[in-house]
Image (cartoon, rainbow, N blue to C red; front, side, top):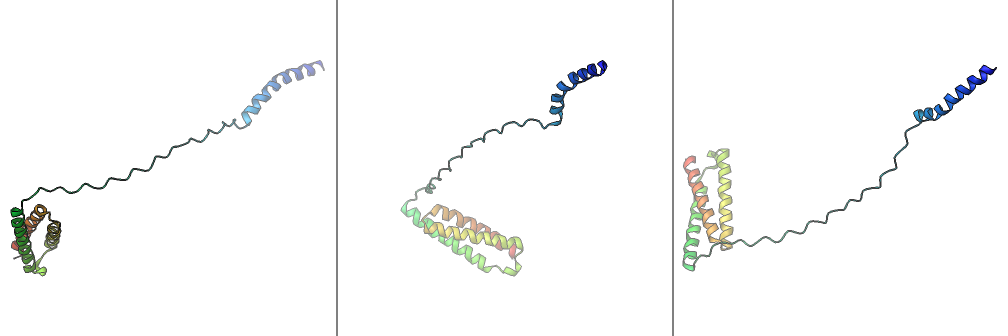
Length: 140
């Protein structure tokens, strides 16, 4: 019996400290406390964009203004006559696209004339006339 008591004491001495180890092995790991939510500062809304600057164009003298207006109007009329003389059935897809571009240039030139932006109107009418002349020569 003495052996049994000794064996119980030895087993108890070995098992009791091991119980806490066994508990640690079979229990879930301790959870970390949740981190406090991070406060995110919202960016202020973007500032409204400033109004666009007015378009600056060089000043033209009164005599030059009249001459430029007449020349521009004449180019626009000539270009419109060239476009009217084209047979739409003979135009390829690229030629029709070019015709649309020329009409757009003419429309913008007329708008520029209406706002007395004569240099822009003149430039647009020159481009439209050059493209129309090229298109007319290819279409014939």
